[in-house]
Image (cartoon, rainbow, N blue to C red):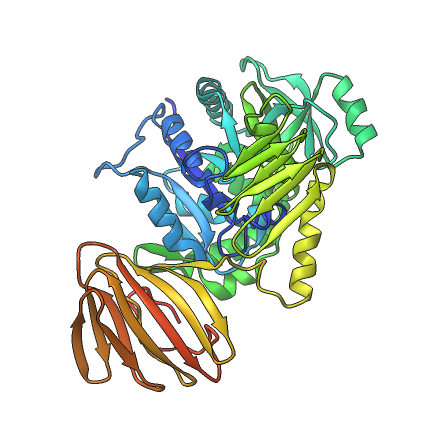
Length: 481
């Protein structure tokens, strides 16, 4: 009998090579880079369709049996984006990234009793060809049901030294189109990759897998018992947090950081590869996004308010202001509200080095955009100077900020639209459009949306220190520290 497929979506990447659009607090999987939906949303929809071909695809209450593993800082963003497309999932929270072996291990442990086929997918890949993808998943699930650990091999269209490769060996008896894995090669030189591709037996390693939950745990126990032991301890110490499963912090942080490829797939004698015939991209750089995008007759891909003159083979990615180019060739130009990237398209892999330089300089542009998302909505900086800062806040209906105080700043709130319920010390007051209130330094306060529409606030901060760490919380519906 065919076994249930449970998608496991790994949502912990940083996407630093797509800076300045992708940043630490809003990495590429949460951005609409390829379609009108985010990469996470596209992945979840793709996974749901593939899962629906398996038995017991939905549980007793009709919710999708899907696991998403993400950093705890992104948990509400994950929930909101999945809710927008009508998908619910079991969300496991990592206190810190420990690479894919630990993530796969905790997902497998979480459903070990049912022993489904786990379909492991990265949240930040782009795939075209739904029928081909679903067919590959079905074949992979059949092979995985025979206790094999399956990777999806992508036809290598060029000798790219940034990818890992998998070489196919003998065909698997009784499994048409599946092969034993002869070897994995991690990021070879361009000449080595070209020679391997010429054999006709080598594929890009997509980082997507299918295997039985218990089977992958058995192999982890054989090759990396330290990872398995730490993962079991983290799941055993897990706690429910507003419907999320928060993994035990101490145990998970003790888990070695290793990719599932190196921890298991490169060592097991039971690795198989399914050659996939769908179009795939890891969306790993601006050059990769240029490859995916529709282009004009001169090979240019553009988004936003863009004017191109005598421009060829370039990617121009705008935000709000006009970008005009004249007489350029093979450039990447990416404009955001607080940072501009101009780079040679052939060097797009090196954008990560720019991000590392920003970190070393203690700058903030690698961390977040001016708009910063919170579980209650978002805030964005409008203006700042010595001893003052102006922000725009949006609070979602039914949500509120924590009950808090600041030791070093005062705040003045003006309601732009919506209806606010304000706690200010011992006072409780409602504010309508164009009304305001002042929060003195050291006063407990809370802002709530008391209406059915988004609440928009202008906040003026003044004081000796205006950092986000000057917050002392007393009550918080989102269980933040």
